[in-house]
Length: 165
Image (cartoon, rainbow, N blue to C red; front, side, top):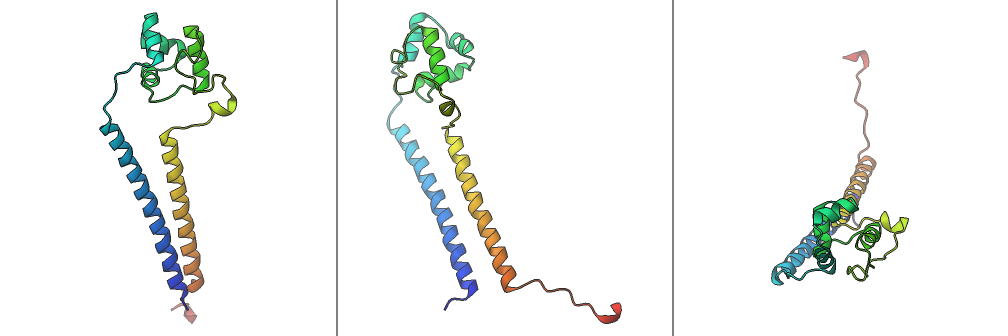
């Protein structure tokens, strides 16, 4: 029969192995993503949004100012690195006086809803979520360890000698 300490050690060891596995899987995923980018050279194919902007003779700065975003954001949309929120799709359609399909934005819903606008989809959100989950596991383990130690070795009061000496 296992002692309480052995059970505790086994629990801690399995929890640490799980955390290590999660970190290794995330690292491997990042490396695989990097290899894909390196193995396929960047194409200079223009997006429909970029072609339409250039056809109108507008700069990224002009479009960005009209939409209330940065020039860099417009570039990210044109390169396909990020997709505009539905609110911005509507503004783009109005600005270019065309529909989302012409601008190459058909895989994104063209009507903005309150639910969709509030959903963050960035990788930083996913990383933050993973960090909080990991911290939660560590906190639970720390509390469990503290309780186990308190049960096994309860705090004993200091020995006081009669007469204060």
